[in-house]
Length: 217
Image (tube, rainbow, N blue to C red; front, top):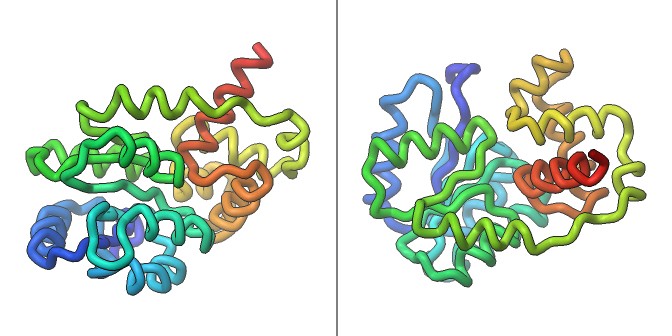
């Protein structure tokens, strides 16, 4: 495996779609599919073990659906960026996915080049959205009120440092290089700071941190 390539996991109950996505990503030097799963139940232990850089997750799966899988992954402490890839642009699906800790919401009718561009943006820490769901998400992000500063004070200096870098959109790999520590150490700190702040995803942490900095300005 190329150590510089971002690790990607695909979770979708349609083998053809997984195959197409894998072929699309296999052409890219900076991304590598390291695991696939056809159900949420099968995906969870693999995702917990690998904690890949990015998980692309189908919403409408038989048995355990994408939202239940997303919730379980976050509950298990998976810090990967998780992007929903679905045919549903229903407002409640978008809002629920973001509330449960998704870092993006893309529709399956996107052109391959556009999808690839969005996946690459997700790997670098950006929130990614299909245009039709962007307004819904903007509203969803504005709803949570800022949490008390006391919780920010509960972070160690290193956790605060990492949270500040997450807010700048840096990936675990970049943060590790910046602070001269291992990827694994960064992941542990991210898990701890999300738990302390009661947040579910890196994007939520970044938005919250930006709000905190804005409040102090």
